[in-house]
Picture 1 (cartoon, one colour):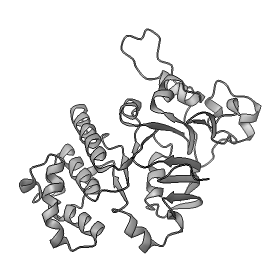
Picture 2 (spheres, helix red, strand yellow):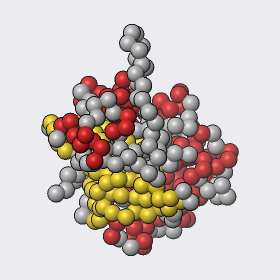
Picture 3 (cartoon, helix red, strand yellow):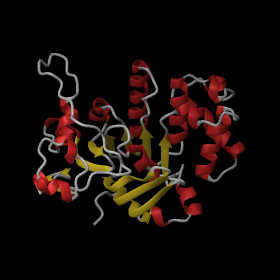
Picture 4 (tube, helix red, strand yellow):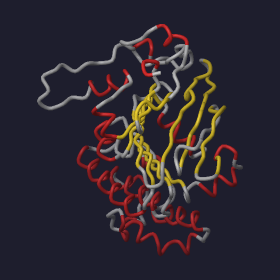
Length: 320
C-alpha cells in the first residue's frame, strides 16, 4: 500500500563492494512523502542519509549497487526505469542541492551557462533560449545576475555557490527537492540566510522537500515530519513536534538528550558505544549493542517500522 502521495520508498537495500568486504549501507529503508510536505532525515554521519538521497536520484554507481526495494515517484517506480527515462525525471521532477556546492559546480564553465543548461534540460529547449530565464533564477536567490553569470565556481564564496545551486534546483519548479546538508559548509550567519531563502522559495514553488541534516534544530524548524536513521535503517518517523516532545526509540531519545539546552542543569547524556561497522553489522536490531533497553529478541530479529500512534512510526521491539 502506498503511504505517500508523491514519494514512497520501501524495502530499499544498498551495498558497496570494497576491498574490506561488502558494506551493507541501507538495510530496508522505509520513507514516504506527500505533495508539498517537508521531511527531515537526521542521524549520525554514515547512517545512510546521503545514500538514500542518491538512490532516489538513481546516482548510485559502482562499487555501489541497489539490490532490493522500490522507489515510487507518483505512478513510476524509479528503480525500473531506463537510464534515458530517469534522465528526463532528474532536474525536471526531482532536483538536488548537494552538500558541497562549489564541488558540485563545473569548474570550467561560467555560472550563467550552468544555470541555463539546467533550465534547458528541464524544458527541452536550447541553452541559448534558456538564457533569458537565468536572470530571473539568479535574482530569485538574491544574486547580482549581471556579475554572477560571468563567474567561475572558484570565484564564488560558499554562500554564493549555495545560492547558485538553489537557483539551478528551483528554477525548474520540481515536484521534489532533495537538499543534502545544504548549510553544513557555511558559517552560522550564512546558514540562517540560506535556510530562510530556501523556506521562502519552496513555499512559492510548492515543491516537496527532503532535507538531510545532522542538525536536529534545523529539522525541527524547517520540517513537517522527521525521520531518524541509524546504521542504514529508519528507526523512527513522526511529526517534528512529537519526535522532540515524545521520542520513542532509544536511539532518538539518546540523540535528543545529547542536545545542549541553555539553562538546563542536567548533564548531557551521550550514547555509549560506537556506530557499528557495516561490513559486519550486528544481527537483529543494529542498535542493540548500544541500547540501554535491549532484551533477547533484539539480538536476533530486525524490528519492522510500525505505526504505534497516529503519524508516529517506530522500529523497536519495545513497541511491537
